[in-house]
Length: 627
Image 1 (cartoon, helix red, strand yellow):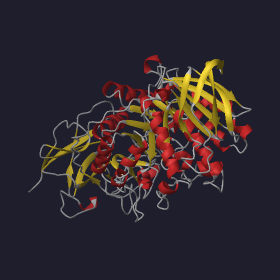
Image 2: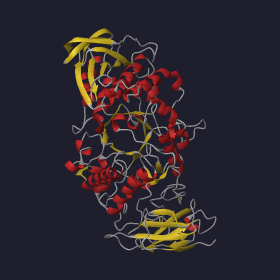
Image 3: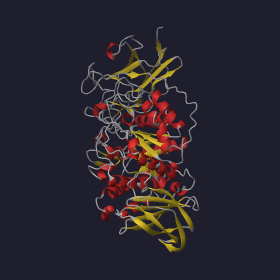
Image 4: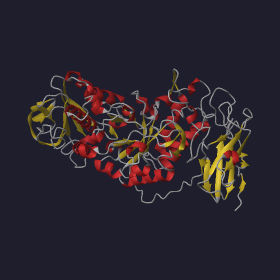
C-alpha cells in the first residue's frame, strides 16, 4: 500500500507517535533551514538513511523566540520501522560529517534505536515504537516512605545467565520473588536508558526515552515494572539530567548544527556553564530543554512507565554550575528541580523524588513554599561516612561512637527522618573498589571480623531512622569489586554459603517494616540517644512512633570487640522486654556467641529512663528489644 503524508499544523506531542492510522513525527530544530524525514517505510529494504527517500517536514508556527518545530504525519506507517531526521543547516552544507556535525539525526524522543552512535560506521537508526501496554492487574499501592526499604540494582550485572550475556529486564524479573521474600518493598534501578557503549553504569545518557538494547525494550521494561508491582515492590528509576553524554555519546550533541562554533548546540549551554566533570550540562534556562526533561521525568517515567519515583543523579550539578570551576548557584537548574517536584506533588504526591547531592544541604528537601527546592528525600552522606569509618577502623577506640550516634539521629529540616536515604554502600562505593567485608578485613573478607562488623553495620542501618537502602549482593556479603563490565557477575552461589547472613537480613527487614506487629517504632519518627559510651563501646537508642507496647523499641549496639554477659541499660517502661533480634546469634553463623536474652525492666532509672534491666551482648553486635 502506498504511503501518503501531510503535515497538520500544529501536531501535538514530540517524537514518533503511533496514532490514527499512521505515525506523526515532530522535532525541535530552530537552526535548521529545512528538515526531512527518512525511513525504511519509504524505501523497502534500505537500512541506511543515505539510501532512503525523504519527505519534507513542515515548519510549525513559532512558539516563543527562536523556537522552531518541524512535523509530518505519515499515513499507514507502522511501529517497528526505522527512521531518522535529516537536518539542513546553512552553516554546515556538507552531506557528510563536518566540524562535528552529521545531518542524519536520531529523534531525541526516540523510544528505541538500533544503535546510538553519533556518527561513523554504525550510528544506528531510531525505531518507531507503539507505546501501548496492558497494565491491567497493576493495582499497586505505594508504601509509605516510613515503611520503604530499598534494594539498588544494576540490570546488566544483577542476574546474568550462564552465557555471560548482559542481564536483561526479563532476567531481573525472575529475582523479584527473592527480593520480596527478603522484605524489600522498593528497588532502585541504575540508569537503564540508551547509552553508547556495550556495557555501562548508565551515567552516559544518549537517548533518555529509549531502553538500553542490551537490557531489553520499552515493552520488557514495562513488563518488569508491572511484575514488580504485582510482587509488592515499588520501582524507583535513576535518571541523569545534570549532563548528557559525555561528548559524542549524546545523540543531542550539536543536534541541528550550531550558529556558534565551539559549543554543542541547542540542548546545551553556550558558555562555561556547559562544563561538568561527566559530560555537557543541558541549558536548563531554555524552555524547550526544560520541557524535554519534564517530559522525560513526569510524562514518560512516572506516567507511561508507571515508575513510583525517581532518583536524580548529581543534583549538585543541576543547582550549581560546577565544572572546570565552581561558577556558583545555577538558578535555571534550581527552578527546574522545583518545577519537577511541584508537578509530581500536584499529580502523584505519593511517589518519591530522591536527590543524590551529597552536600547535606537542607534546601533540597525544604518545602518550596519556604524557599527550598522541595524534593522528597536525599542520600545522606553524613550517615554513610560515619558508619563506614566505624566499620573500617582497625582499633575500637577509633570507632567514634559520638559520630555514630549523630549519624543515627541526623535529619533534615526538623521534618522527621524520612527526608533522608541511609546506606552503607551504593554503586559509587562499589564501582571497581573493594566492598565492605574486604575493607573491614583486607584479604580475609569472609572471616570472623569481616562478618561481625558488616552485620553490625547492617543492624544499625535497619534500625536507624530514615529510608534504608542496600546495594545488590550486600545481603550475602559480596566482597568482589562491582563493575558494569562483561567480566563481572553477581555471585548467586553465596546464597547457599552465606545463607545465615541472608536470613539475618530477612529478619532485619521484616522487623524494620513491623511485620510481626511488635516493632512499630522502627518505622516511626521518634529517636533518642540514651547512651553513647566510648569506654565500653555501647550505644543505646530508643525508637518510637506513638509509644507503648509493640511500638517502643530499644536498640543496643556494641561497637567493641568486648563481650558483655551482663550490661545494665535503661528502658522506658516496666516489665519484660523481648529480644526480637540478635546479630550475634549462632542462627546466622556458628562462631557467633549467642549470649543475648530477654530481660525484665525494674523500677530504678538508668540512662535517663525510669526503668533498668540487664542485657547480654556479643562483640560487634546489634540487639532489638520491644514489649
